[in-house]
Image (cartoon, rainbow, N blue to C red; front, side, top):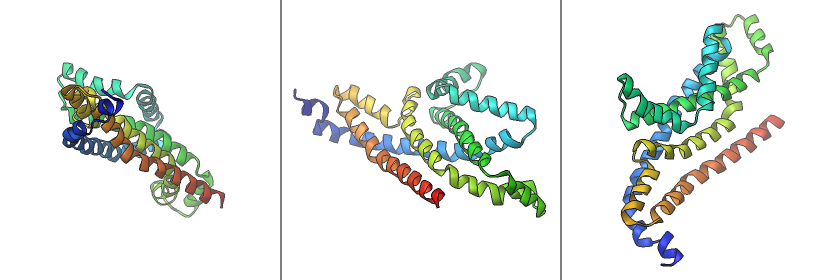
Length: 224
């Protein structure tokens, strides 16, 4: 067996391509769900972290610290395998979406917190002098500016989230890596894993370039 026959077997790749395609769709869907749930939750958590009463702030700090410190795989396993012991049974899809969303919300909360804190306090004071309420000031003045500042790091977090979806194979969710592992066992060939790696590269590399472009554009705008 040559290197090409072992790792880049065209016949094996053609045979597993439909399964890999299903895995890609599930990977993209899981990533999009985690981002769609995690980012809005992160905004809310960051606002509670900054402006809620002290006990609530302590709770949000604990939430952020825990879900940033604990590995995502551990969170996923605890939700899928531990919750049934207390009578809560969730499917692989729900468990994975919940785990990824919780972790995404924790990281997003810190990103948004730093963005909001970078807005000069004088803008709050000026808005108050104009008679604007605190909620209106946040919604129309502070958050729009903060969102522009946090776009580069949030884009990077989204790319990382899509890569981390491979961990969902631990709960037998049929995402790309799970399909590749099953195909590797069936064909007794590492070609499916190489195919999965190439597919990851194909849809993540443009996202990585997008992150670089957004960061450069953000630096250019800030320097003006």
